[in-house]
Length: 235
Image: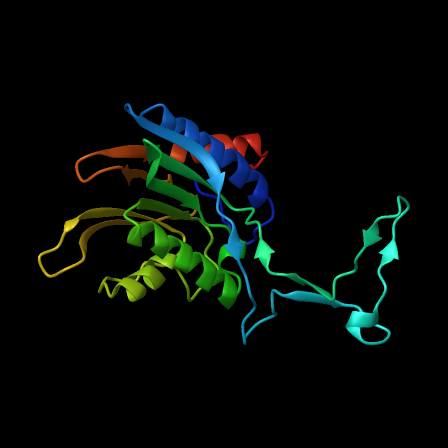
């Protein structure tokens, strides 16, 4: 049964175990030549006009013109140059996902949405772009979001807006699956969508993870979640 994740205490532990349980559930059903693994995608954050910038800059004052500055020597007599500045821009995203490949080509991804994926405008924009990239590159996607906050935002709604799909609102907590299909007559590609609302105290649904137009893996969200919650010592 789904817990109330209005407060996020304990989520990291559940996430780390749940993603492994999901991998096992998917891997055991994959036919040849598909392969499943857990991986992460590096993200680039450059700060924005709104919110707190994600750039940290360290500066050192130089005495005299830069071309006259003498480098210091380390203990072995080698030049030890100090940089003019250090800029933190590349963030190794701690978010992990289940990826399914066929002959090395990504065909599907499963992501568990974490609170940090949507707690700020910049985070929402970053992960929305990530999920859109899967679809634009032809990879199928299954998103699971058990977190109700922020109340006025959900990735299914944001994706629908970006893709210009008219659909009923799908508030979090929810789960949504996307299957990238054949070319559409009017251009682009067909996109099949499965949307399910999640409810506190109720079992989680069985969701499809599409691999092709005609093949999908049934993902047991309830059993995998229950095992993760028990192993994370949630009541």
